[in-house]
Every structure is written in structure tokens, then in C-alpha cells.
Image (cartoon, rainbow, N blue to C red; front, side, top):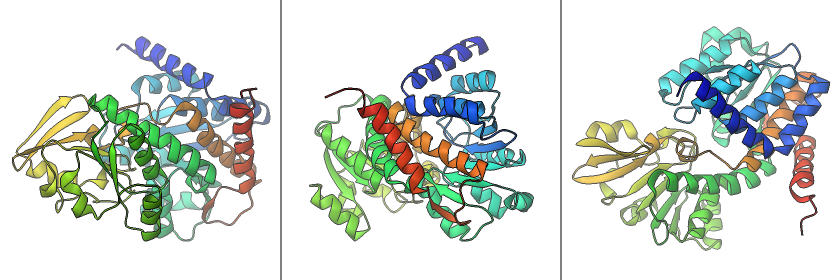
Length: 396
């Protein structure tokens, strides 16, 4: 596509998202008057797609200068062109970037000297706390947000104390229940179906991880007629899966029967070299956790007899006489093969981001300088906005 065609396509994507994001749209109107980010630079690591574009529109209306990078395999190149052209945002990255490219782009975000950062998987925070180049920035930041549980877990290990607060969006009940359980569940199943065009009814599916995201994936797969088994290490959460009616098993016990495997843990090497020999011919493997590292792909590719691209999002990896089908190169299946979480779901999640950043920008947040949940007042404000816009429409 030409630049003009990309621009028009990106604008239409964002327009469709905007039409279905009344909460962030309303915040954009509010920010245009209050200008909470005037004179401030926001450094962001978040999937660059149409819903993010609507959020960036709201932030820039509030006076923000923004530099953003996405994640490998999830960036929408046409959306990038529209965001740069229409909002003056500096976007780093493209759809086919490597993980190494992504980390270097995160460095470039930090080199812009942001006053606030909004992170995804703690990639920005990790560089901030481990690389000497960014030592001075640690004392200059007004605050930060982190989108994911994966990122929050990394942060609590990496930086138990810091010079600024990081508000974890994923620690809110609103995001855990509405976005993770219902949004991720729907979008992961959508991504799998778009990538493969195979029938899920009757498939023996294995979901590894039964947190809020994993439970949503398991529920939606079951809703499509799949026979779902859950693997979960935490005994309380495994008990929850059992009480929800899912068969549960140890990983080694469940792998040989699985026709579809979805990893949703946020941990590295969940499916690794010790497991690949147990996989059946023709198994489909998808990752719905934050990092492709949930699957030990370097080893799998190194040991493969051949790798053949069957469809745009499907690779046949010939491993010791069997074909294993990997989706989206192990990247997040819902964003790499689909459009991510439903628009309305992200309207709520990005509203939490916007108000959390605004509170830190304006100095109205006075909590401790640690990794912590979003203030309950902000969560309740966003929940009320969701009720007003989603339920308060006179529908019975």
C-alpha cells in the first residue's frame, strides 16, 4: 500500500474504534479543556492499533507530547501512519519487528526524556532500572502505569523501591474481570479462528494457566464446543477451574491428547524442550501470554527438520517426524492474528490508563512511590462511566 492508502486505512480503523469508545471519547473532550498533560512528554510501550489510536488522540488533546512503541507482531502499520499524521505522535516500530528491535525502540522511548511512562510487560521499567544510561531519568519521572500482571510481577522483583509510583492497571477488578476474562477470552478464540480457519467444536483443547485471562480463554473455547482441559500450578486456582467444571491435569499428563494448546501464564518456558516430544502430530500451538518466550521457540526451531509457512499466521514445524503448527510465531495470538480485545472492552481499560496518568501529571495522586493498584476512586469513576455508557441506554 502507498503512504496515502495506509493513511486512509488507518484513519478509517481509528474512526470505527472511536465510534465504539464513548468513555475515552468523553475523556478526550474533558482533557481538551483541562489540559492535564500540557508541557509534558509521555513515553509509552503499548500495542499500536486502532483502539490505542483513540486513546492517543485523547492524551494529545490534553496537551501531551507522545513517543510510543508497540510489541513484536502486533503493530498495525496503517494505524501508525494515521497516528503520526493526525496527532503528531512519534511512533517507533512496525509489524514485523524482532524482539531485539522492540527493546531498542523501548530505549529510544526513554531517550526522549519522558515525564511519565505507560508500560506493557515492564519493558520500559526493566531498561530504566538495569541500564546506566537511564539512571538520571529514574529521579525525574512524575509517575508511571503498567498494563499487565506480567509486568507487575516483573516490577515487584526488579524494583521493590523506586522514586516514583507505578499504578498497575491490571490490579483493578474492572480490568481483571471485564477486560481479561471477557475481552481476552473472546479475542484469543477470534485470533485462533482467523489464523487457522479450523473448527473448534469437538477439539481437545489444553489451556495452560487459569488466571483471569486463562479462565476467559477456557470459557470461550468451551462455548465454541471444544473439550477443554486446564493445567494450573496454583492449587486454589486449580480448584476454581475444577469447580467451574473443567477437567484439570498435570502438564505431562495432558499434552499427548491435546489437539490445541494455548499458553496463558506470563511465565517463560512453560512449554519447553522437555515437552515437545510429547506433542501429537498436527497439534496447534498458540500463545496468549504477554511474551512469545512462554514457548521455548529457539530450541524448537533449532531442532526442526523444516519450517514451512502454511498460512500467513501458521507455521508447520517438522519436529522429529511430526508436524507441529505454531500460530503467529508465538506472539500474542489475539493481536497478531486478530484485532485484539473488543473495542468496548479496551474503552474501559484505556480510560483507567488515561485517568491514572492524568492524576500523576496533575499531582493529585499522593500515594506511596511503589508498584501499586490504581486508586479505587479512579476505578469506580471508570466503572460508573461504563455503566452510564453501556447500560444506561434505555435497554431492557
